[in-house]
Amino acid sequence: MDALTLLNNRNSEPRLTKPAPDREILNRILLASLRAPDHGRLRPWRYLLIEGKARQKLGDLFADALLARKADASEDEVKKNRDAPLRAPLVIAVVAKLQDHPKVPRVEQLLTAGCAAYGILLAAQASGFGAIWRTGDNCYDEHVKTGLGLSADEQLIAYIYLGTPEGLTKPSPEVHLDEFVSAWGH
Image 1: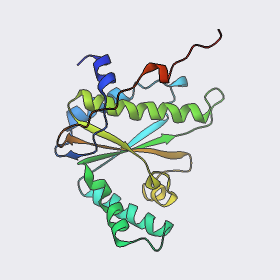
Image 2: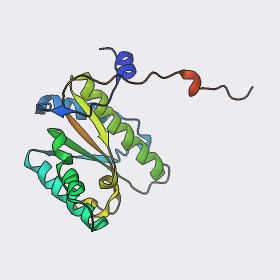
Image 3: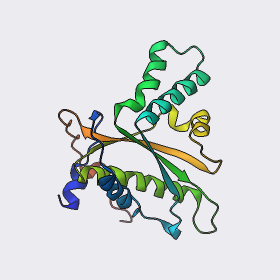
Image 4: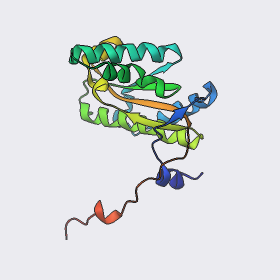
């Protein structure tokens, strides 16, 4: 698949099953993501690979965080949070590792970490796998951040669920350039 075809057909895959990419393919996917645009070559990101029983441990962390945020959460809400990481055979937590730099503001570092995460999505699809970028309360929760071992200068920006697409891919909505592009300075 050529690059433009990939970019024009990229789609999130919410229903994922086994297998996840094997180590060789996963390493190629992650290496591709390291080519994100990066002012100052700071590489202000890192990844946590969560698979196997670690997904259940992450689900327990999500459930605990929910109960800390909302003590009266229903059993269904707790179960949904606990089961969330089980929706794919591999979850990649994308962490922005922000640092003080005289020429590269933190917002640029956050953007480049987002580009690295997007690189994972693209490389996964190019490798024949499906992925979806998820956030939500568990992406911004201090209890979860602590449970994952993040430091004060780190920010969780995405959970990328990765596996084999299950069922038919939902078509992407059609987009039109005139909704997004205009001339300036005329």
